[in-house]
Image 1 (cartoon, rainbow, N blue to C red):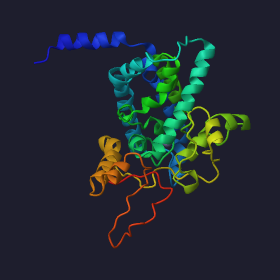
Image 2: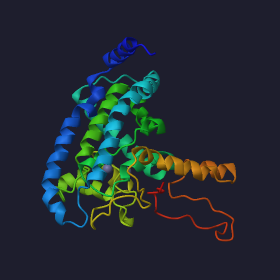
Image 3: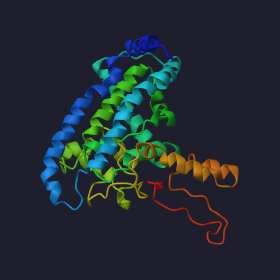
Image 4: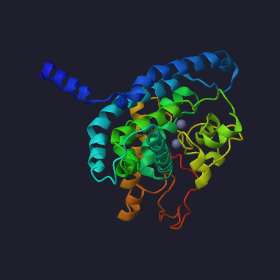
Length: 320
Ligand SMILES: [Zn+2]
Ligand SMILES: [Zn+2]
């Protein structure tokens, strides 16, 4: 029988080692839930007349379940895996940067830049897409959509994208805190409440309009608007698209499930299945880093050896 007291001691010691900054998203949860409640009340009556309601109870329950598991498991995984790895990398830093309001602003901008590339990689590299697909699996857009996250992000290695900030000289905890604030900001862009904000804001910041386009599966919206707090890196690197037509939310190959476990692992399973299919090893391994829509050319009569790759369909997902 496990000793409950020693388990409690270990748990208390572990909590004592954490910092308030590590719990940012947990501490902000009441604000997120309050915002969901206000939005749901706002659209409740109008939703009854809509053919595609903004809120769907089962969909929001799925998102909130995934969000709850993610919020708590991620703190655990960050402690067990991510912080030790980042602390290890920190010993090779170029310099030591103390946190002041100005250096924190620089850190936030640096983390935003890293987030842009993490998010772009999450759409264009199958390995990272396996974790990110969870966030795009809702066919609705409301504040609960923001909560739909995968707790397998840390295993996929999302933190590797922020390690350059650690190597520059920022403390790992501050890097993760800046990331938490960035993610907290992003919660508020998941809404259909506002259409466009004043032009200067739409020009610089990631807004509900830009992020609605990001969640659209309309061909013009695929793989666009990767920014977290800002939209300037999308403008700079050619991935910006203006929201014009109404976005059709969800995946190109929609996953139809309300099972949180399946929603979390379905793309990992699909990738493993693709890799297990017979063929040359380099082609099988390529599924790991090729874009999600990439398929191997096969030499059957139905599929000639040089069959073209399917294009612009990154939101790859299979049914259970
Ligand atoms: Zn995305
Ligand atoms: Zn989103």
